[in-house]
Image 1 (cartoon, rainbow over the protein chains, first blue to last red):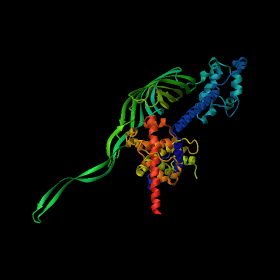
Image 2 (cartoon, rainbow over the protein chains, first blue to last red):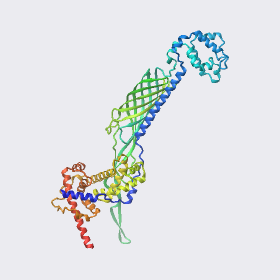
Image 3 (cartoon, one colour):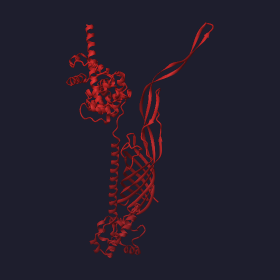
Image 4 (cartoon, each protein chain N blue to C red):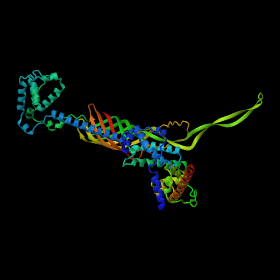
Amino acid sequence: MEANNNFDDYLRQRLDGHEILPPPYQAGKLPVPVPISKPWFRNTIFIAAVLIVAIFISGILIIFQNKQTASNSVLPVHKNTIQSVDKEANTELLTKEASLPDENFPLQPLNKPINNQANQKEIIDQPASRIILAEFQRINMIPLREQRFSLVPKTLLNRKTDLRVMLPKTTDETNSSAIRVKTRPEQSLSAGLFFTPEWLFNTTGLDAKNMRSAGLEINYQLHRYSIRMGMGISHNRSNEEWDMAYQSYLGSYQKLDSMSFMYDAENHVLVPKYYLSDVTIYDERIENEKSIVSSTYTYLQIPLVMGYDFAEWKNLSFGLRAGPQLSLLIDASNSEPTYDAGNNRVISMTNISPDRLKTNWQFTAGPICNMWFGKGLSLQLEPHLKYYFNSVYEKATTDKPFAFGMRASVLIQL
Amino acid sequence: MESEQSLVKECIRGNQKACEALYYRYAGRLLSICLRYIPQQDVAEDVLQETFIKVFQHLPSFEFRNKGALQAWMTRIIVNQALNYLRNKDKSLHLIDLETVNPMKIKHPDNSTENFNSLDTDEIHRCIGRLADGYRTVFNLYIFEDYSHKEIASLLEITESTSKTQLLKARALLKKYMEETLNRKKVLQHYGS
């Protein structure tokens, strides 16, 4: 036993670090290295993170802008001061201010001359804040050069502190939000188009990780609740692995099949005639080579998504959307590999990638950012996570897939 | 000299020169290992080539842990490649007839290793190459790759006792071949001088 160990150690020692240099031409046959890019998911996560951050920053900016607009348009009224101000004083101040010979004050206002007593009475009878508000709105609509003829002088408009003291609060104004104009309707049915790029996880290494889907959808909104249905087509590129079994070409020779002789009467000799055929020699060993072929799978997607908006502003809302989605495989374009066998003999070509399932259920959930523009037009951005209830392959080679996507849709109110 | 780690990084980036440097640094050692399993030089060179293709393909997934990790990883790949070749070549590699060489007929030579010092490494290599595929495989896996009999048995789909027997026979035969080589060398030296 010890002798064996000695012998083993001796051999290890003798052959340790032994090198036999390969012939130099071997190095020339080295494969050209392909630069390895960063793992795809790092880029995807980065893009997704940037998108989410961008959405929230834009959301915050819009909210901030809305708040600013609201604070400019709504004049806050202090309760204490309202009690002490009466209609006569108010009127007096207004008329007094109006009669001041100021260059900003309109001597001939645009549509309601100040020296008309009937109009003055009409103005006085209305709550002062309404007049001011109406004027604010009107001024905004009049071109700048005409604003000098407005009912309320610019100096007065700028003196907000004075107005706060002067103007009594009306019942309409008690709720300041009543003055805000909501672009978004409380109940609506809208239809539109959506586009969703998605990034798939837990698929086979050969499958493309990105999937694109687009389609039509209908969205019903009731207050903060919504339900969405639709139909879309999604495309997923896949790389399928084919196994090529072939025998290498070694060479060929001419085989003598038969020969015949003819008698040459002139020379008195037999002239042979050979019948030859080409025989190709292939290696007995069957070699295998993998070939990658691109295929496209088309799915029909039918979502049913429920939603709730937890934050609403004038033309922006944030909420959550979740619901199931059915995917039906409607087309699979599998192309056969174009394998250049050269002189080699192809024994078989077999697709060794797993087949796709015809039906698939998923559950999708995520936050939504809903932006409302005028004329019933809205834009929705919805980053979401999609979980697949079953594998997309007939033979589950991987865990159940999941996807991260960003749905963008444009909807028009019907 | 560029460190293993930086060489690997450069290869992953697709630097052709780094790949060549990696090849020249390890090809000799890997070919020597491969020739221990496959004595035919041309076949061993092909296996070496396949090994490097695999190495470059899987280099991004290689985790550099310590010095020598790369060589150990590449050695494992070339050993696997060589074993695959032997399996494809002879589907019944694991069914080697145990009576091919009768252990009784093997004359156990002198156990001292000092005599073999006059043999050069290439000659020892050639002696290993003379062993039958099955003996050589078990012998190499046990002696040089430090596999246990249990691991060899599972790898080659044989029983542990077969692995032990084959190792015993391989060792005895190798000693015999080495002694033969030594004697021939002595005779040649005698007549040469």
